[in-house]
Image (cartoon, rainbow, N blue to C red; front, side):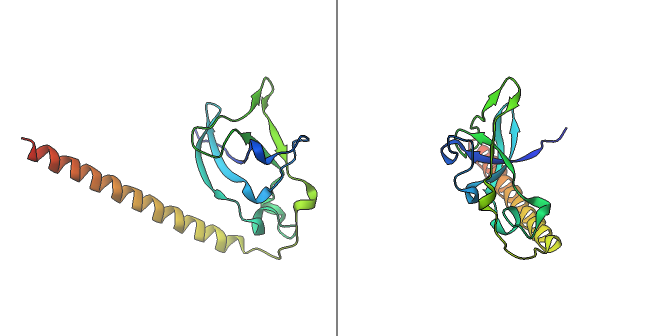
Length: 135
């Protein structure tokens, strides 16, 4: 089973009409058990708020107490509570080379994964060395 990636906004960043106040402070998240399981950096307005690039425009966001791992998202009996991006927040940023952006994102994810694997490997090696010294 996979987790659906959603746009997410922090509760203080919505107004009384459930409109996002500052849409540049929206992130991508995955949720598990009504909480943020994983989270990206802030969105890029050139792809998410761009009238010239409709393929990935933000329209709605789940609402989280805070933008941090483990934060609860707002849920009612019918499901998630959503905030909307105000149409006046979309601008013309020009065309987007989605293939290039996707390639850059995949490369960044690979680098991050390799760095994490290296850190885990070093940690395991260090723990193993410590266990040998304690014998």
